[in-house]
Image (cartoon, rainbow, N blue to C red):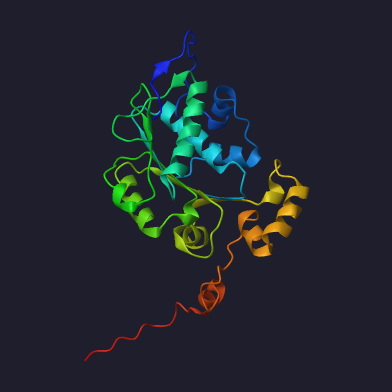
Length: 262
């Protein structure tokens, strides 16, 4: 699916970066990717857990691809996994990785086992997964797990993926716009605790999106959808009788649970 592997000629790669080299410098000088300030913050971060709650068209998958390429290129024999709601979406992110590897002088080949995969000469590889939990099991020792459009990935898929990070103590990054107050993306954003690095970029703070376009979209899609897709707000989807905020406000952790015996 991804073609054959070869080094381009006659290019010679010099000054190969180490794992500690700044990923921002690597992205700019080697991948010809000029990140904005918030994207640079993500690339620079060494956080083990990260959440990108950013507007549509901010470049979530591009910055994730750059982060993946840096990991693949600087750690011999590592495994990066890409999950998303569908196989097609996973393939798009892996395709971005293939394009960046080409800028390093590397043409990608598959690993021989997975239809969406790339292998480097060092043995490092990236695999794109379908959106079904029953078909993703079996991977282990994962160095980096990227979940794209995470708000629309099922919780059972998330539960199937997380154990793959156990032995390697691998990194986990979630990228998405919100999709209601539900699921692991929302729960980790709101209740995940201090272990998560949270990056929120509304469209009004993205230098590549104009004010005229945003006003046009607000009129076209409606206020609630606009707040969700472009402003990164978790809005109720209307499926429940009571809003999520109202339910959470009514909970009291100090109330003891009563048990009854027969």
